[in-house]
Image (tube, rainbow, N blue to C red; front, side, top):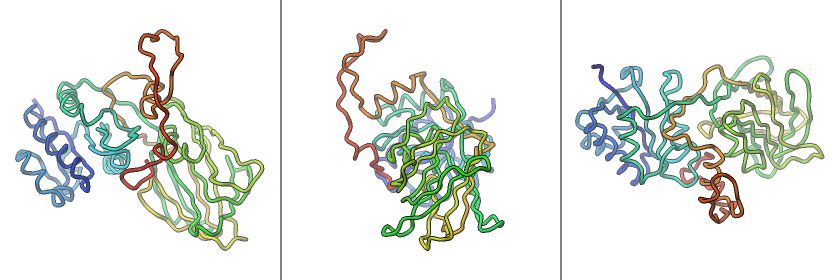
Length: 324
């Protein structure tokens, strides 16, 4: 029988994540699975090696293939970083939430042991999530290319000065205005930065891109839901001296001088997210944001209960210092 390998990643700067990682590595070995660690992670947290002496430690993920699944212990920020590591290897990500909202995570810290057993028993499914392909141009020269699972965010560099942009879709101009920035998100990212900026929540099954202006100085600057087959172009106008920055899932900062053009479209390669239950997205939305549902008299009226609304601050709080 072929060896079953599981990549384990954790937020190494958090003691609770390190403890959870040690438990996960040890239990994976007890279940007969081979844990995989990246050498860069192992160097930062040598205690992880002691918890799983049989773990495979590699410098590059390609050295460990085939890897069945990647377990991520942390918040959404940790999952986004792990997505960058496994992209291109067709490895599903299974998140265990150690943060606050944790929309990308499938289970909670208290369910860690059960989650490992679920992996061991192969009682999970994987679904594809749309990603974004992002290119930055200065003139006709491409100066940067990246991708994002959640969003591409174009923001002003100087908090005291807004940027002026012109926005186009499918080769045609839509509007120009001054603003603090623009967020272009996937359905997965619609509950992250885009939501905080006033964008709509989009069900993961819907294939679309959401463009949400941030503090725009314009009469028409509403969020737009755009076809996944379209290309969005955002250009900083030359007439403004203000510079911008591009963030792709909060991973990297790219300078945008006046005249720079950002082109965003659907990426050919999606990201695979592992699911351990068939919980509807509407139920996940209620649970993650603690939405009030008092008065519901649908087919599940026996389970209807009162929920306390989460404050706006907690919805945008990112314990790992990222928009996730």
